[in-house]
Length: 145
Image (tube, rainbow, N blue to C red; front, side, top):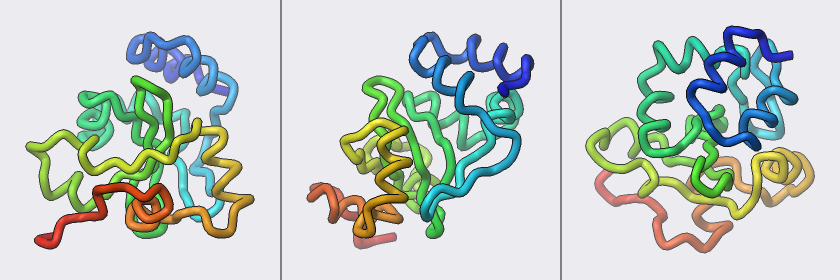
C-alpha cells in the first residue's frame, strides 16, 4: 500500500491518472527484483522527488526512472507515451547536458508487459546494448565512452 506522504507526492508530481493508479495499486516497501532488474520501492517517491538528482533529471525530460539492470542501465517509463525502456546509464551520467531520451531504447511495451517479458522471455534484454539489438535500434552507443 502506498503511504500517504508518497501518494501526496505522486499526485502533486504526476497528472496522469493511469500512472497514479498504477503506483497506488502496485506499490511496495522494499526494492523488488523482477527478472534481471531491481526496481525502486514506490514508497520512496517523496524522497526521490526531493533528494535524488538523477530521478529529478529524468522527470525534467518526462522519464520516470524506476530501477536498473545488473549493468546499471536504468529501467524507465516515458511519461509521454508510457512505454517502458532501458536507458544507457553511462551516457545519462557522463553527458548531463544532453536529453537522456537520446540514450533511451524503448521496448515497445507498457511497464506491466516489461515485467512479464523480463520473466517469461529468455532472450529479453537485460541492458541497453541488448535492448538496442533486440529492438534493432539505430542507437547502439558511442565509440568514445
